[in-house]
Length: 178
Ligand SMILES: [Zn+2]
Ligand SMILES: [Zn+2]
Image 1 (cartoon, protein in one colour):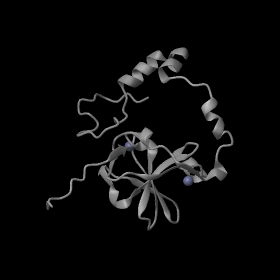
Image 2: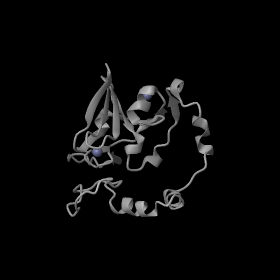
Image 3: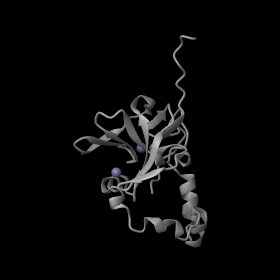
Image 4: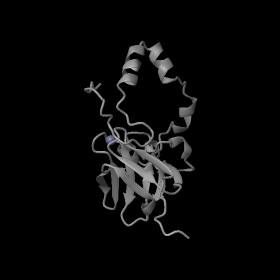
């Protein structure tokens, strides 16, 4: 038995789009779900909120600060104040928080297992997978936006899908926001 502090190397990591907020998760998330409720639609600007549960003690903000909006008496929604990425949903007094799947560095490993809030589910939700599909590259070329794609690739301000020592990179030139 060693007496040193247990090595808390993160199991999974994530953060917001701009990289001002980064977090670490130290145990396997559970209750992978999507919530179609109208409040989640609004908060995420999407058709649903993809969420997993993480026990409070297994979640740590490793960079920056999560900003909070109290969307109802007992619920706080956490986001990055700099870029707006939705990050967490927390019920007062709960032993766990909900963390947005899309903000994880490897979201594909967090496959939803259940849907809730189905009263607000988009009536055509089940048809989405039948829509014609195209890659970003191919769709851009067909629309004549190849130059734009190159600009996006060359000036991408999105934090990469892994932890960084310094962000944004100090060699970065002036922003040319688009
Ligand atoms: Zn951000
Ligand atoms: Zn919801």
